[in-house]
Picture (cartoon, one colour):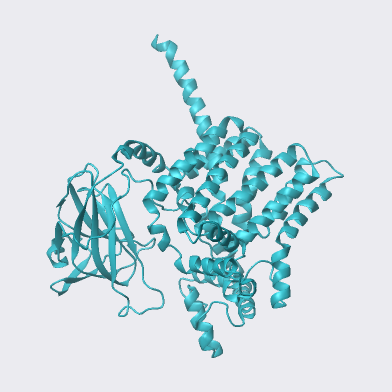
Length: 574
């Protein structure tokens, strides 16, 4: 209930913005789902352009489309429910391994802003965690009470996860490696083989389909070559290997090299399987010639998996409830960018292009403010909409609405470059940022850098307009939201990782090696295998569940220590 409630509030806050994440990928999934739900099975199984992903998520979306119609909200609520179940599975895993810490582990998973946010994306990463967590739970039961059926089900669930994402392709052998430690001689090989074979059987329909349709051995999907090349390029700071960092760059380079203009249109498409294998060979050639360098790349990437993503936490106020229609509303505040030049940060530069347009060249800070408006008067507990046309020419920028001190952010929007379009031809985007004033009567608008690595941004700003949409509703939710927001703000790398390390140390000290092994086997798999390829945080999201269980071990120990100290101090006070 807590997990579902937290994810519902996160959906209230972010359901508009998450639709802008990975739009090309989500459109591929939905196009494939429409082929299936529309009865075009031949196109569904033979379209190479959709072979970048296994078919499971498209099948799931097709089922939702056939049941309730084409509804992004229905997909999101299915994923919210699935991720809430994942919190329950994490609870029972913790109960089997570290019973005292289980309630804390369940609540940490339920409150996690990272897990909440990723459950809203129209991508399969959050629901992929469910079969993997179930597989680990069954493995735990099998280790305590070995039964052939339980091992088979554990392996089968790993195979099911691969229908959604291919990242778990080799996970079953890793899980099977736990069996010799927990099962007596004579049965080990049978149980290990059962787990691995069950995973293979669950994945087999995809492999057989690929062999029958394309006459090639493709276990799950294409994309290994693409991810391998991008994984090399993102750490090739000197560009020694001439490998593009983006899908579009790879497509255009191949089109130029092979004299095939159609290669620039699709990542796979024509000759898709051959192209992906060529990319694998190209990537492996780099690795063979620079093995030490690439070992360092894998180490750095593996360490990055332990960092928590920067995601929105629950807002302190309920979201805007009014329609974002300003056709009959006059702005309550309006300003040309030239009128705001007094708020330009010292390291930034601004120059007026026209009376209504200003070009802003940022400094080199990662997330530093570049332009800050004067204070703007607003009414308490009211819905507002900020409208701002912008043209980003370089870098990444965010526009925020904050309090006067800049410590409290009411809302924000991020601006990214359109890939493959020159600076001069970047489109003019009209940002519409809704927000609730809450208890504030004065706000500011801040234009800031938004890049994880320092880089200068160039952005053309047009006229700022602020519209009053009317009184806010659901103001009674302020206090529950405030409590949850305070909890979620603690889910940062500097807090969670030390607790995870401490929990690991405590299990080692207590000689609970089996619990530690079962909690670390999945993270170890992703660190060793996934670190070889380009990785986004959502690809390794399932690791967070196990880290939070370990953090719960440390937190429960700390609370027990605190209770002991307080009990010792109580008689002294008397």
